[in-house]
Length: 270
Image 1: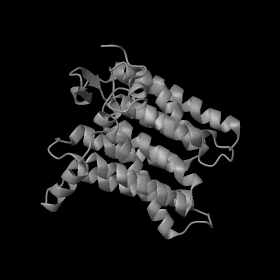
Image 2: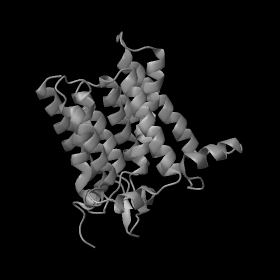
Image 3: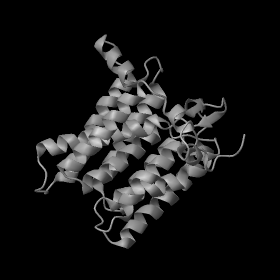
């Protein structure tokens, strides 16, 4: 991965994110894309599809087909939940509990869709590699799906999910060997291209954008990691997902010096 190609992935992601969000907000007026945020203000979810387009375009510019699949697939299943979900079931436990009762929620469909997206992205990543096997590909698929879910869990305050995406992807984008750099640079670029309206409290990623952001970072990680790295990443993601069922991430962040300031950075004073 040449420095020029990494730069192209980031620039394409950033410019596509800003341009597509501006175009969508001018063209789309449907209330289906409007939500009320934590502060009680109306926000648009069109940042989500703008991020998906930016992330996929950046990944394509960076030569990462798995990244394109991860961003587009996770974004599509996230959009299903954004547009058709009724909110009656919350969290992994809620959706799986509903499925156990014979109720098929859009959240449950999304969980299955993210798993499928992750598996396809992992299979594309592992083609021709002799350092991974079928089990490693399955673990890789779970990493992509888990990363998509954790990013969505962070999309509760302006800028939080985008900051987490950027912080997770930037080291991969700058890695000297270039493995996974194209997808990671695309994730950084797409996040920078959409961060202004997010921090301003005018827009949010929603399931569409947050799932895509996490999945793209997960895909970048797979290109770098073999079995040990994937198992370690999956352990962290599973722990974070299970913790979210019992602990408020917002409460933890707001009570932790350093994290609290980073989380609030860039938001306008209210």
